[in-house]
Length: 198
Image 1 (cartoon, rainbow, N blue to C red):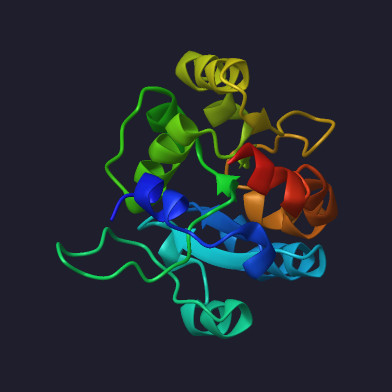
Image 2: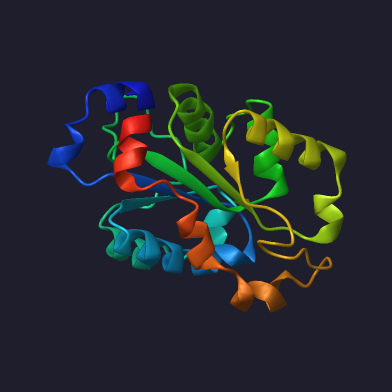
């Protein structure tokens, strides 16, 4: 079942907590995604975690499943399988890699995470993207163009020195402890606002 069908067939917002999908890409920062889940839950979200294939290498899948009460998804389901997650009222990609940002901007959906983002954008689901990368990767013109395109399309993009200063290549691990998880959660719409937008 598509995201559109699941949104259309979902129960009224009063009957369930609004659902946030946290999409984690292949970055050492993904190890801390449990903190993002915790903060979002404190704000009233029901959280589901989806990773890219490389993102799955950095997370503790059983721990996140226990924390969220939902399975952690990485791959498209098989034909005929029942959807394992409730429909999303908002999505946040954090950490977002250069790879995912540039593919998303041109509509490539070769991972479950990208497929969800492309479809959700077409449905008007509120979306937040938080790139975490180094100064060399961030300098690529396609990445910069993609950030601008996503912003123009209404995606909330948190990027720049006011969010997280870019680090030299190979030094990302040394900067994980300074990542502003609270600021990331603050960029999300309130759960009721997200439901109205969807």
